Length: 184
Image (cartoon, rainbow, N blue to C red; front, side):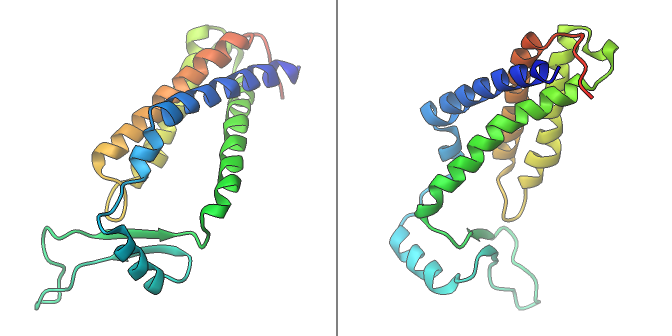
């Protein structure tokens, strides 16, 4: 019975990898969202290198006003330093690939333990994955908004991407998973 979960999950994983290749590799979604370039990059880089020496997330605020408050409409900058350089890109890629493989399998397993009535139709099985995408959009993507986070439009785009990606994943897994499969 486990193969009735693994096969749909792996099929979904293959679909997720293709989606990532198309959306991130060909259309550059992730790089456009996460890699804006700074004018005078080398100058800014040297200042950050000298001042941000410990791994962590930093916020750079404007100078306080005479009243001791932050001035209105002045930018707040977020700086994130993981403590590693470009040499770690391979490890990040491996972790991302592992998550692309495991997420659909875990989703297929979760669907397999849902009620028989819920799993009985293709639409409900797809809806199950759409709800996972909606959950991620609300509780993960929307949390990235705000001071030292993403702008609202980027967060909404990230959320829509999660919903659409998990719906596409659901279309594939639901197609491969038989409604009578139950793994406990």
